[in-house]
Length: 288
Image 1 (tube, rainbow, N blue to C red):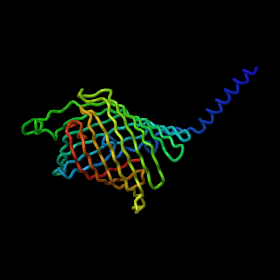
Image 2 (image 1 turned 180 degrees about the horizontal axis):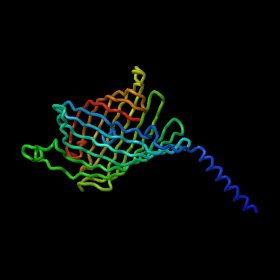
Image 3 (image 1 turned 90 degrees about the vertical axis):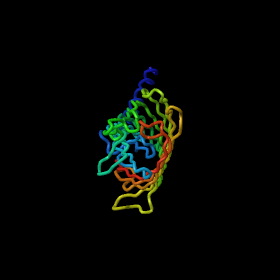
Image 4 (image 1 turned 135 degrees about the vertical axis):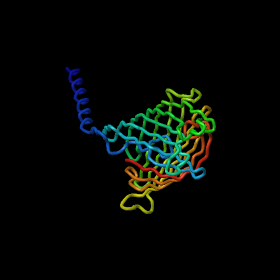
């Protein structure tokens, strides 16, 4: 008898717990905002914009987006899943409003993000599974001699990789700090000399500018530092920085203008063994 009563109490407790949890659970289809904002210092993130390199008048042109499809909110926990489709192109000439595209890196895949906000610190985890392929295109082909410029041959470059990022957020209202740690493992890659493992770390900050509004929109100053190491084929380090200003609410639509500096292995995968150093000036259209 006592055993039956105890068992009944256990079932009632479990039922009440899950009933309360279900009452606090909210399912969201096509959320208005993405759960994880792209890392500004990481060149392999979805964005729309241009980074111009004054030293040779070349450009990196980004076209892409990351959007959440489903969301699940449970008290302080929010989980989302989404899709990412993006590419960035290496522009070596733009005379006569005709862009000469030398090389392209393309990405597509999906992500799952968990955001947990128990107190003042927000813990954010993002997992991505991405297919990345790289190509030389017609801007690197000399039609007069019907051959690749400088005798370069396209490299059959492919990476299918899983990536886990932990990026806690410290927010005081006017000031936000986001350090992060990222690890990546390739499941398939070409050429075979590429190492499967890659790791990165970095930090971002933003602060409301003294001019707090422009045409009714919030103004933020921001900075980003990103460092990663990858076996290309030997493990080497690459550093990328950004400093700029965003017009528009920090977590919403806006436009960012920035200065950048990049030093390390070329961001365009067809030239992955080439070490470069570049200062840039650019802008991005930020999406929510």
